[in-house]
Image 1 (cartoon, helix red, strand yellow):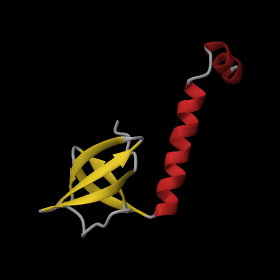
Image 2: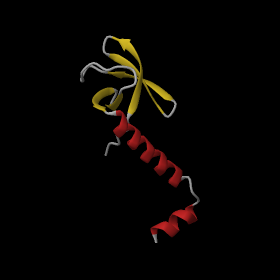
Image 3: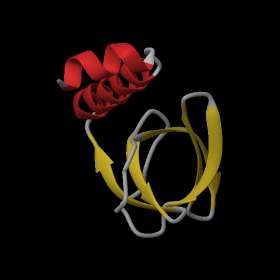
Image 4: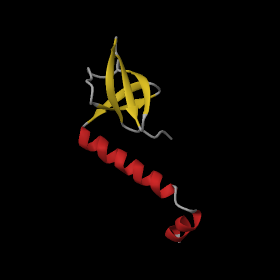
Length: 85
């Protein structure tokens, strides 16, 4: 199973490469498989290749949900058990 997390383009590196960022982590991504991108665009990346572009609203909604999940998982185990019962 793959989990796709939106990444934001922070810089174009030329020759179909972009620097992206999510959660403070930056990485280099190939943009050869999609139309030209611009700084500020949100992308879905698989195996180092951008495979789709998301609109800002959809990307921010997805990132907020991932943040909510992360916060939920940081709760003590007892809190999780009571919600699952």
